[in-house]
Figure 1 (cartoon, rainbow, N blue to C red):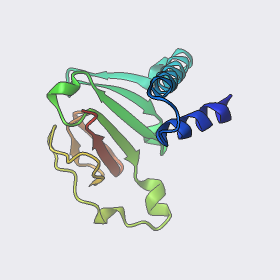
Figure 2 (spheres, rainbow, N blue to C red):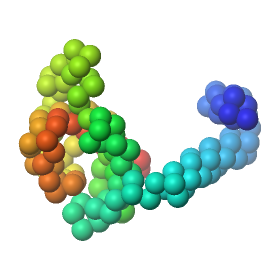
Figure 3 (spheres, rainbow, N blue to C red):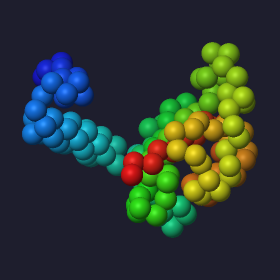
Figure 4 (cartoon, helix red, strand yellow):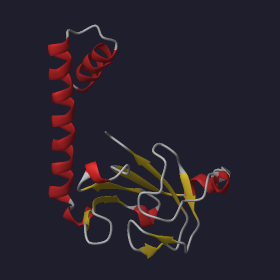
Length: 146
């Protein structure tokens, strides 16, 4: 089923499918993604964190402190250009020899990121989306879903 859905998505993106079929395909993909989130949260409810009082965001933590990543979702996306924010532990990139310090420095304030631009946050630097400092470096990127 996964290959079939993937093939349909490619056809939809290529404009081969009629608009109604494209819309149905997109709805199916979104539905599958929501189901995946729901199953994950059912098995691991501790991965969902509420940062509504700190930054107006909900968090999906997939082991950031263990080298993984975390994604934040704005509760009110109309009020910010930072609708979805990815936080990635920089350790693995450094171990591969990638100089992540060459990325622009994280601006340091809510709403200060340019959409789709990766930023570097050194270890121990205040991070306003969490209201804390992390003991490890981060790569951070926001998307504006408009």
